[in-house]
Length: 263
Image (cartoon, rainbow, N blue to C red; front, side):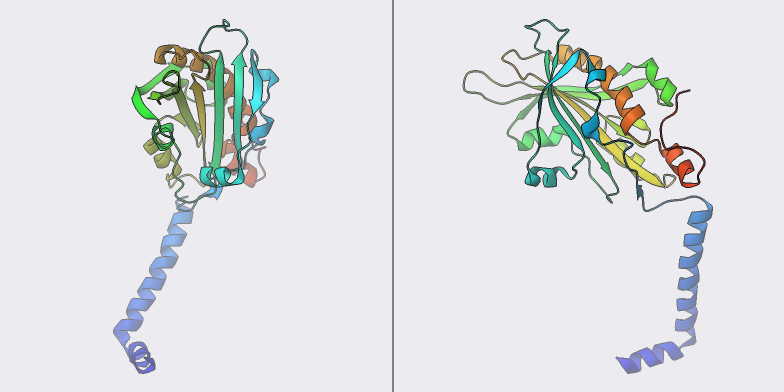
C-alpha cells in the first residue's frame, strides 16, 4: 500500500489531477460565496416560541384544552415547537359542527432534507381512509402589509374511520408558511427549502381539524370555518412568530431588527 502511494505521488499526472481537484473545490466555494449561493441552510429561529401564541387575539376562539405530546411523539414529530390546542368558536351556533376545531401548528428549521409531515399520509397511518378532497385558495388582503402574497393556498381533505356508533369523518384543512411565502403542496415546500438563494430556511404547518363533536361537518362548511380561523391565526404567526428571512439576513449585518415590518 505504501509503495503504491509513493508511486502515485511520483506520478506527474496524479499530482496535476490532485492539484486541479483542489483548485476546483476552492473555486466552487469561492464562486458560491460570490454569487450568494447557499447549499447548506442555516437555522432561522422563531421570533417567539409558538406556545406563546396570543390567545386573546384569537377571539372569538377560546382554548378548551392544550395538549402536550409525549416525548416519543415529539421525537416522531421531529420538533418541540408546536401548538396542539382544542378550540371553540364562541360566535358559532351551538349545533354548528365547525364550532370545535383542533389547531395544530408545527415549526421546523436547521434540519437537512426535512420532509414535511402532511395529513394525507399521517391520517392513513392512524387508521383513517381518504374520502375525497383537494386544493383551493382564498384572498387575505391584510397579508400584503407583511410583504406576503394575498392568496392563501390550502388543502382540504375528508377522512373516514369506522366508529362504535357512527363513522368518524373529520375534515382537515392545512397550509404551510415557508421562507416568507405560503404553500399548500409538500413538493412546493421542499422546493422553497432547497432554493440556493436562501441562506436561512424554515417551514411551519398550520393544520385545522373539524368534526370533533357528534355532528360531522361537510367539507365546504369546514373550509369556510377554516378560512375564518386562518384570518386570525396567520397574521399572528407572520407578525409575532415566524422569522422574516430578509430582515434576518440584514440583522446579521447589524442593519435592522429581525421581524416583519408593515408596509
